[in-house]
Picture 1 (cartoon, rainbow, N blue to C red):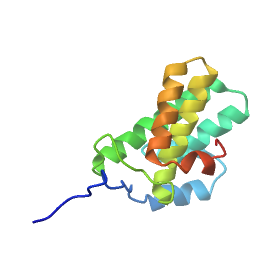
Picture 2: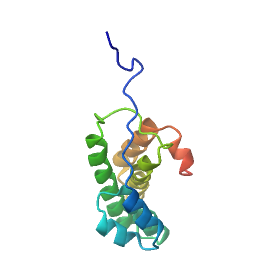
Picture 3: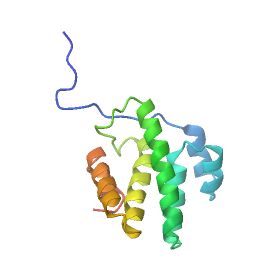
Picture 4: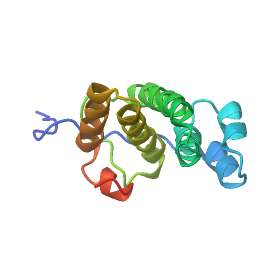
Length: 137
């Protein structure tokens, strides 16, 4: 007889996208990477973070939402069923987690308090250490 994880769902580990990561590492233009690899959440997260730094909250929100939804698609394809750990320690998960954190931040800044709370709770549920890693704790 085989038993599953009695403590809850197993962690979801997204597959690496080495070509997209290499492209992002090789440029200072994350928009070109997002255009070439639209499924790559890290490029969208980078765009969101840069938009915030430039004071462009609405653009940051849009980039973050895109990265978040692209990440959800990848999580589901990787077997995620809507709950369970998405560890920060697994590098390919970081683009999604960064997008989720950026979405929480942008939602708060535009007054979408319910969404901001939901996204922050999702981030904490995915990996309690992610917020600290992102300087949000």
